[in-house]
Image (cartoon, rainbow, N blue to C red; front, side, top):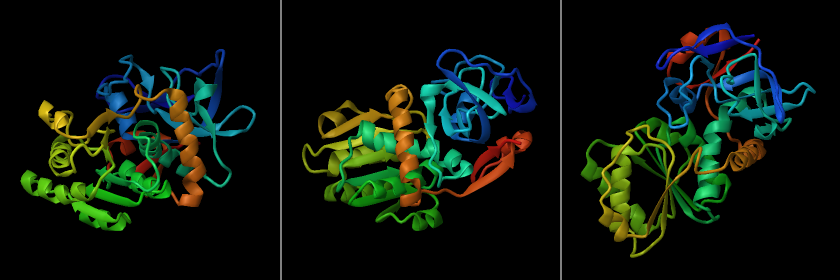
Length: 313
């Protein structure tokens, strides 16, 4: 079969023949139709993600959409190594597949599954969000952040606050309040303080780095005494580390937690994806998507811009 093969750390995948997968006990073969190029896919391919296996060669792609041998259409997550989603066929534990509603097409399902899961899981599994609460999304102009705004609204957030560098995209998100991320840290912290003084229940952080540092400081200083703020760390697009004084946590009601592979069981992650799919049509969950044949993976891997979904012959 043909697949996008990663032969070494930091190398772009090449479209070549790869060994045919076979199903063991509890596994199924999926005939893949679409697989998205997500930040997680790239990070695992580079060997920099904490969940990377470190073995080469392997097929790129952490998830995708396709059909089982009996014709059922499913989404799959985390195939058995060295197989991956960017291939004509893949082997995956049957428990790591989710049926796709008839009203949801393959490309849309592939595009929204991973980024939609990130906020759905962070809100439900980690923050234990309740309808009527206020949610602040740090880094709302990326694919995951865009869907986070839509999902928070769908799940009943009373107020949605969005941050990001792209002011044009911020204006299109439909958030109640937007905060442009500027380089002046003091000015940024000053913009955050009145928001926390009014009340923020949950922060979904896709960036970490400087903006997260200022968010935490603003929350600690401006929120009413001992007010719980569930700060959920999801991504590190702006930096892998921050300086976090211990006194900041001791002097506030901030509850700092992470959300991702390892902090949530695979079974629960699959349940969150099912939730995203069920909400997709009624909530209008959507992203700008570009499609490209898997044979052009080298070109697509190097490109930026819209969320990219590779399609199979």
